Length: 63
Image (tube, rainbow, N blue to C red; front, side, top):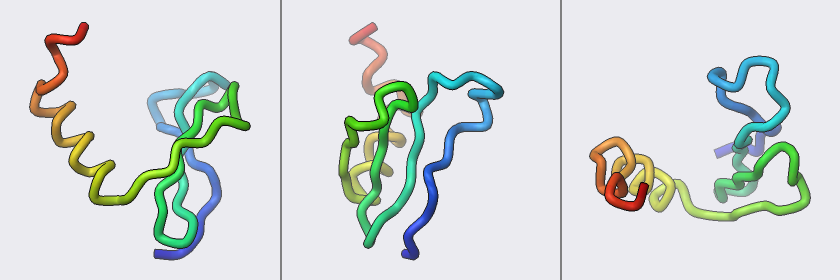
């Protein structure tokens, strides 16, 4: 996995308030664009499991 620049979702459009993601040395980093100094570090496997759970509705009862 090669290091990359911060990328934001295409759903964000011109908005400056969005979640951004990048990979650095095999680690996935996430941040909110308006709070760029706070960065969440995770593994590709853990992020994939979270996204799968979201798509499957596993967290819908928390709304």
